[in-house]
Length: 152
Image (cartoon, rainbow, N blue to C red; front, side):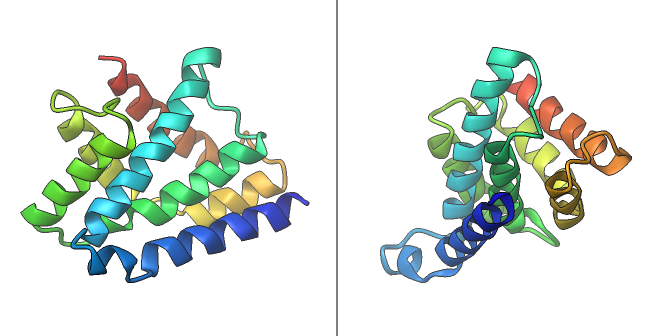
């Protein structure tokens, strides 16, 4: 059941991020990806605020990591100023202004570092219930660092 749910979520995110609907209405893929990233960060931040950490044994959080992996793809490689601008604007909107003018630079910078993480390896480990392995601990720490910057 867990794997089936995860696969459905991954396919859904990939379809949404790759479809041409955004282009037809004049919204860039970078803006859309930023908006999706903001929404995921908002969900993770809610749990982080309640419990003080992210429970990576929770299926919803594994799905959130998968969505995050797909949505931060705009920040991979050589990115232009326009890409960062569009992504940042979408990030603020998607997070319902949890990410704002004061912290957007730090959040984008942290996400740029996170984009090179091996999400598929981490997700695979989480599916097997392995939450206390170096790769998972590192990614969890990186994400919690981002969430900490949102408190400011």
